[in-house]
Image 1 (tube, rainbow, N blue to C red):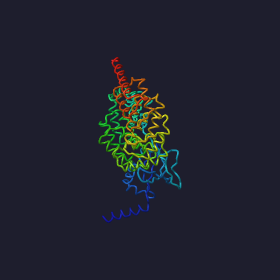
Image 2: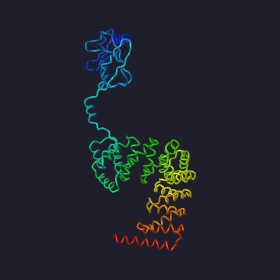
Image 3: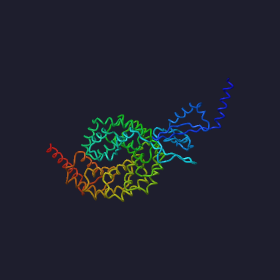
Image 4: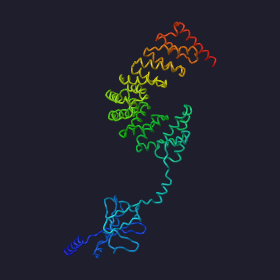
Length: 480
């Protein structure tokens, strides 16, 4: 009995090799496809292979990756309203429940194989989701539509959209337009707003998936808005920035440097600064913008390796031909920030500053003098150029600014007679700005430089200053 059963199975295998099967897909008028196994030339075998047909029908429900290629069969298999084609399954599976055949394309050809275009049919749920999906909003649009920080938070509470960095950037843009008193009041309202905590939580959730430059801009805006540095939000963003520092390109390098300049020292900031040094050491020769180079120089810190400082100096020397006037003015501050005195670089920048000094703000000139003091760099041509320019435009400056500049000159034992005479004349004519601190500073500068106003004696100068001080005291007494 067993031998007869074995012989029957062997005969069935032989018929299988002689009569190949093919998988077909029926195309119904509604566009859904259902497979059917068609056996050529020998129909009785279908009785033995019903289970195989059921398996083939169930397997078509899974996902295909690539296309289905169809070929027409004999006309014997065509029925009214139903077309039968051969389906060759290629690679992975796609979901046929969301796919339908294009009615405009005929899948049937006599001697060729043609690909059928599938179109994704969205369900009613998908359509409703697209209709209710909030439109993306940019921080520029928010900053234009809103007039206060609370208005931005109200927009967020209505329809939160991704990324949350747009809201922080919009609030920082609005805050920059405000006065100091108004800014302080608006920040208090921001911290007490019920949507602010929700925005911070969403920012922490999105930190790992948003663009790296958006993350850095958000961190900078959050710090500038006055969020304490020891909060969970700021420390979380610092950790995520550390983890994703390899995504830093030149633009992100500049923003990261600016962020580190604005933050106070802490463990996460120091770790991030150490990572920045490693990154700069690898990418210093790829930096194209001088502004980015100077931002990096200001942020790496005074305790950076000497080899890295020299590498940045060589990069700056290579880019000297591309220096703008602003680049030359800011190079003093950049070198002082990393405590590296490059005489060649300072001399070249000094020449450009002297040649383009007209129109330069006094604040920048004071920063240059402070940087020269920190770097112990003494250039008489530079000092004379600055003093001559201030003396020429003396009437447009405040006396406190000029006094501060004279104090910096005194650190280098540099005396400019014309500027000091003009300043003393202004003090005699308008003694109202003087206080005790200013009088002490004037006495120190003029006595240290041994300068007398228009050949007058030292005793006369002391008497004059004392008279100015008495005038200041009487003015304060009357106002009280």
